[in-house]
Image 1 (cartoon, one colour):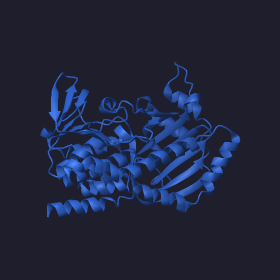
Image 2 (cartoon, helix red, strand yellow):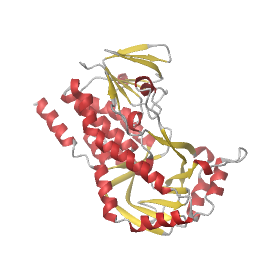
Image 3 (tube, one colour):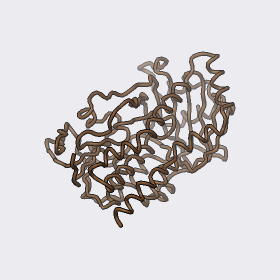
Image 4 (spheres, one colour):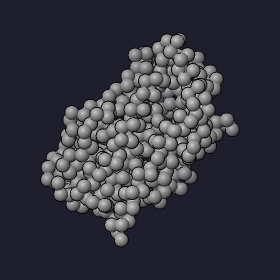
Length: 388
C-alpha cells in the first residue's frame, strides 16, 4: 500500500514522544495527539539501560537525561531479610529516572505546533487514508497513523480487536519516598524474594528511593476499611527493616497499585493498512527485565529510520528488524515473573538456590542480548547512503 508523508502519532507517553522527536530529527512532518491536557506520566521511577540511552544520544538528549537520573552499577538479589544471594554488576550503564523527567526532556524538544493536547481518540477508520474521530467530535485524516497509546490501546482495539492482554494474576505497587541514601544504597538495585512476595528498591536520585512490591493476586486480601499503606506494612512485616522504613516514609497518595499484564507474543503483524503500532500498544511486557520503555524507544527510532529509508516498505521492514528481539524479551520477562513468586517452602529454597548459583556470565549474556542495538547500524548506513 502506498504511503505518503502525512503522519499522525497517537499517544504522548515515552514511546510516542520518542517517535515524534525521531521524525523531527529526520525532518519528517507529523502531528502528535495526546488525550491529556499536558504531557505527563502517571507512575514513578523507570530503568533506562544503555540501549535506550544510546538512542537518546543519537537524538541529542542523552546527557540531559543522565543528569536527571541516577547511575546504577549492580543488582543485588537477596532474601526477605536482605541475606545476599547474588550480586551482579551491570556491564553497561543503567540509570533510574523519573518517568516525568523523560517526558519533560523530550517534549521540550518539540515545536508547539507539532502536537495537540486534549485529543482523545474515540475510533478510527483504517482504509486508504486513516480517519481519526476524537471524543471532542472532531475528525482528522492522515496518510499514516503510528499508535503509541499503551497496553489498553484504543487504536489496537479498533484495528486488531482479536488481540487481548494477558494477566499475570499478580498485583504491583510502586512508590517514591525521601530517604537517607548511604553508600550501600547509592548505586544498587535490590530485589528481595519471599514466597509469594517480592520487594524491589533503588535510588531515584541522591535523596529519594523508588520501590516496587509484588504479590500474587490470590493472596491480596485488603480489608476495605484498611489503608493501602497499612496493608503493605502488615503484608511485608517479616521483611528487612529497610523495607518497612521505605513503606512508612511513603505518603499514601504516592503509592500506585496495578495488576501486571502483557500481550502474549503470538501476533502476526504490528501493522494493518496504513496504521502501525509501537511499544506497549502491540508488545506490552511485564517489568521484570526493566525493558518496557526501552523497547518502545527502540521501536520509535527503528521505525523512524525505516520511514526515512523507504516509506512504502517501512512497516514490514520495521517489524522484521524488531520482532525477534521483542518476542525474546516478552517471553523472558513473563518467565522470570512466574518463577519469582513461590507457594511453598521447597519451592522457595529451590528459587534461592537458583538465584545463588545461576552463573553470573549467564546473567551478563542475557543482559547484553537485551541491550544490543547493533542492528541499527545497517539501517543508519542505508539512511546515509540514501541521503548521499
